[in-house]
Image (cartoon, rainbow, N blue to C red; front, side):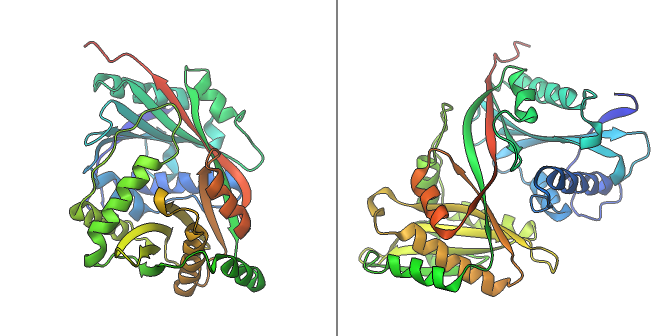
Length: 355
């Protein structure tokens, strides 16, 4: 690791921060390089604005960000690795999570090992016993990818695997019509509402209940996760964070007409810009007692149309689904999603630092 130093990244108030802004620019630059190296495009890259908003948000967790700097001159090009360490504070206080990356040209020099050691040291000192790190792998790889082997050699195991999928746009109009026709007759008693980058005040409490259900029903591996409490204030913070990151969203919800409550939703997010061609499929959920009405497919078709109307330049949608989540995978296949790599959740149980 000749000429490599490790620096902590402080939170900043603005993307134009004169002292530390180069660190955020360097991390954003590295996410572009990593995404292109793994997937052949920069769809997974993060903007500087997203990074600044992420680093500043400690409402649910404490953050420790570290960069690996090559040389001594502060510049975005000098950032050749980073680690984002998250120590949960409101829920799952025994857990810590790591996102990390090393520039492809600097791998094999011990930078990744040093960043992982920092993660484990900080986590253990804070009493965290369950260490987690999601690891992305490319379309030509599987769970035997080198980056997963990096963790298994250090005592981590694969806890859960998500399949990555991509949907090319626009969808064939005939196929969309066929899919919508397959929903008819199954969705009686429900209606949909679509909102762009917001959630109306009168629906916040009902949406909070959906969020709690999503956390509770999310496909898990062997790691146990706490149930979470959502309220109006937390929903408002969710919206504010979306805006702070400079992102837009299309969110479609299903209302049970008889009760006037929300029973399902789906969301797409993207960064508005002339050059952005991709959106991410976030949560899709239908409450257990309302499944079997093809609401998931209906929600996703209507929401996709709304997103394309707002952002007609979108050329593809990315999503991740647990390989054990067969119903949602079936919906995605029906829409035309194709496999595109995946993500392995790596987990390790350790003893807390006695000091």
